Image (cartoon, rainbow, N blue to C red; front, side, top):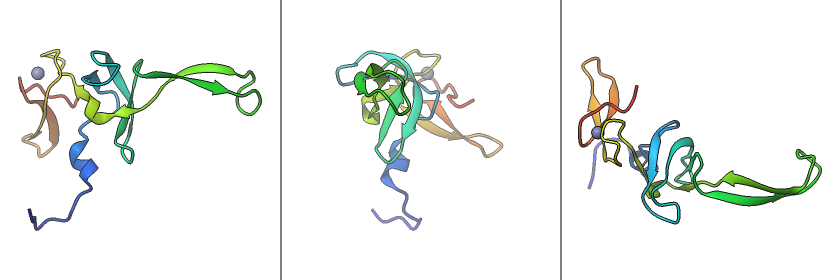
Length: 118
Ligand SMILES: [Zn+2]
């Protein structure tokens, strides 16, 4: 397909998640979990979701930590494994874009039309 417009990186089209979005994990070992997006890693096409995908990390004494040991931290998961949750439907939904009367673009729920951006 040839568009006359300038090319956008594929990730910009694909990722519709933002920090603080409420998402549900739809695939992988954390399937079914709900959490808040803590950060979006655009280059890696991954998101870090609060309380999802904890991994144990070994730390060494010295440096920034005073004690060595094991800490648990959320690891990024691929953003195709999560879906945005609609506050109204309380279900994972497909996001649609809508232009408001004032020209502002917002994300809306593909199911009920609820505006997700505030
Ligand atoms: Zn909805």
